[in-house]
Length: 298
Image 1 (spheres, one colour):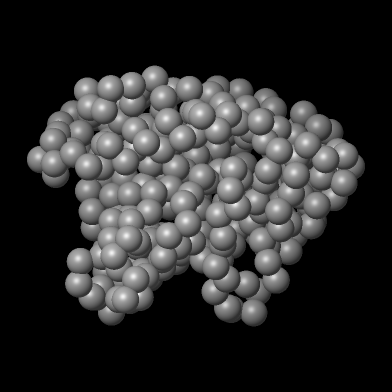
Image 2 (image 1 turned 120 degrees about the horizontal axis):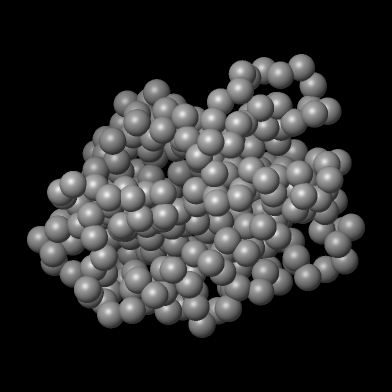
């Protein structure tokens, strides 16, 4: 099994069929032909690298204080255990991040690097447009009206997480990863990542870990728990992780991923889509669902 590469500019009926197959079989897809400007992606990635190159003391000023909605928040190295969201006790993840979104509580906008705020805001708008394109394809692939998801995404509560995976210093603790094995909490996640040792891996139905290669100019898209609830598990949220590179490849293994969590508005009710069988899950709002999952990881 491989993660399919889908050209969104291809004939639409074919794209819908390929998207539906990916949802049913693996819960991951790589998209090209997406129309998000590469100059914007490159500029945002460069600003992310510059932020993480700041001193730890300067970065930590954005991790403390009274949180306010709509401001960025810095998550220091080893401050999260993603595997804990599934009840697994593991050492802390070897990553740091800068999180931002209109509905995310944070502590302030960094002054350095210049232009970071503008780039994150422009990236948010551009990838929100890709999210709309994808959710319309999802609706059609589920035999729903094309606009079935649209009301749920009015004033959506999406967010950006720029993640830095520094080159490891020494050997990791037993069971320690760059990001522990987990499923994402929301509807869909849209990733722009880099090729470097120690990358994203997806677990197949047979239990094997499959490396996800970053196709140049592409986005990797994966389904989250919310989509699994909506589809009554007809489309799955696939377990994935970020591996630690082997010791002989530590040098040059720094990598960065720009994550876009594309989620409905906070009060949207997530319940079984008509036609997806007898519901396995009760109704829950998007905010209740995400908060319950996230609380276990910090």
